[in-house]
Length: 424
Image (cartoon, rainbow, N blue to C red; front, side):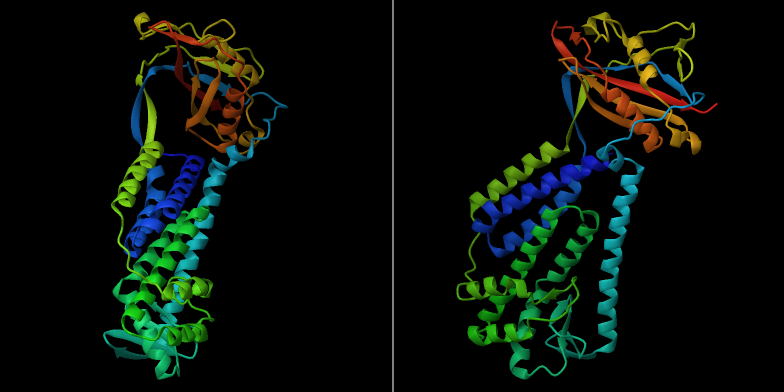
């Protein structure tokens, strides 16, 4: 499962990519129908692409397991250093914050639906041309929601006809589905500004399509524009298709030349090619092809008041010497030296002691071809205070001597490192 920070980052990358692709290719070379479909799919892809994990083999990496390290809380007077912002946000607190904000957006969405329900129940209903027309003094600007059109009571007949034509276009094209879908996407993508840009562009496409349908029906453009200006301002729920005053100037400019242009084949091919590329880039997760598991039948204990201790168990190394020339070395020695170094720098967080938190933290790291520790990640965590302490120490590791693969070349080595925090 992608981490929270990873998901946010990849979602922002996808959103930026799809937004730029729309502005540079789709908007100039596609019909409004094509633009609408693209904007909907781009928004959905921004949500799901980062969640898809496609393993990609990387033959130059060898995976090993460092012996388990136990950390006891028997020491006193120790305190962990303060974790960074990004370490906090990817922990339990960040997840709670994320879903709290998402819940607020969900509540806002539900509130909008309740407003619609209340207007629907309190207004006067009539049926015109298959549409349910709801009139109320509480409505100040016309809007539609699926098969219902909401207009202010007392609207004169001259204004009513083009407005009903406009809103019936929204209904027939099922534009309300798009708005509801975008509202649901915004609940989990509230942090992504590009989702708001995509939604705004989608609303513009809706209005251009509806305006084109009105003009094709033979309504006078100037009279239609005057009607729009007169009814432009006023409240309407955000989950509806409504007259948008922010789009007025753009719409008026387009009304005189709302040509139903065709989508160019080149635009379609570019969209398919580039969308496939971003999918591959975001969803492909590198995994080691040569997964060589080193098991250790020994226990390593790090006590805050004591030196590192090992039992007298025998070590069983299941990796064949043919798989590599030499492992990475820490301070000229093997992984045990790294364990000693970690045990001397790792402390049991005071917060975890007070809250009686204990458990096994499994962290993965890569010793690169240059001997640098990188890509430190918590595979299985216990609590942010423990997870962050492990990340802090491992990230501060001195440089290693790179490992050599069976071809005699420096190689990336992927280590898994279990650390057990235990209260006595």
